[in-house]
Length: 189
Image (cartoon, rainbow, N blue to C red; front, top):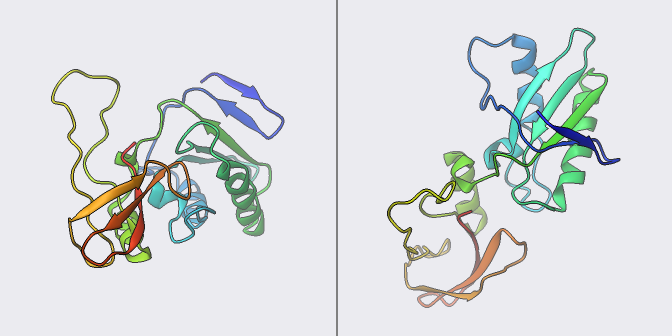
């Protein structure tokens, strides 16, 4: 893994990920994972970082330290500093010392990593979850077609995009032609 210190912690460009933790792993790793998994995304507070799939690895050390690897939803995501601080605070409150949070940029995050529970939470919160799969790695093959986005209020597919960028860069702003309600759509990335 290549890494560099950015002054806010270590940023890595690549990580070998273990997501979610495998059943045979050390119980202390799983316990730390379960604690870290409670941290919510500051921009979409109904989602945890586990729901989003940005929590990649959690490893404990013999001296009660913990190393966490997270992947931003996009490079430069402003929520990463808050998530790093929240992870440090929650793990420290549970007795862990020497909490280190690494930010990895490769492989790049994709909405394919979002859990089904996370997608359901988005829907309940009034944000249309991503539809379809991301085109990964520039593989040749079928072209991904844009699917109609279902309104999270009335479930109509008669919707249209108002603007490609909504309240955050990860979302687009749509309006439902049936109920006339505007809503955010979490883009397929």
